[in-house]
Image (cartoon, rainbow, N blue to C red; front, top):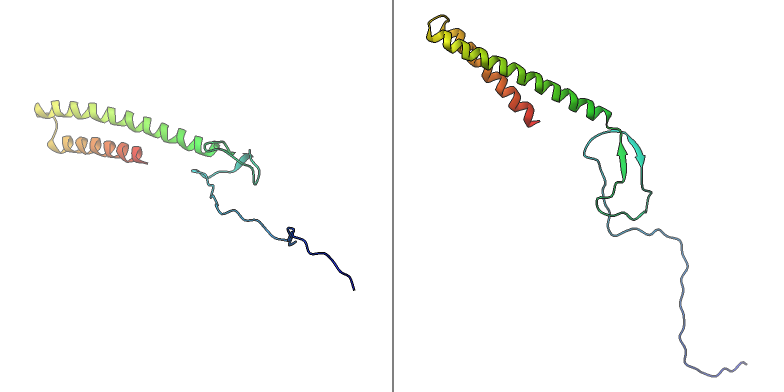
Length: 124
């Protein structure tokens, strides 16, 4: 028989196991435009600050589309300017009874259509 003296002390408890730590907060990261990533500047689990650049996207398609839209707008503006000048001429000629009302109305419709086209393109 073994005898031991009773004494007061802390008893440490440990449990060993295998598991996965999951964050309470998840963040979904997505781009505002479609494209292929060209560089990923962070790695999984890395701490980042708000506004920090995380990746770069190949923007050649977006830049080309923007340039095409700008060229289209410039063309539409030039057409509108020409149509407005023609409309002024037709108004003068109509006042002199040199052109019909129908021709004047057609030119006004052309101007209105070009203005609407510019407005619609600016909205997109």
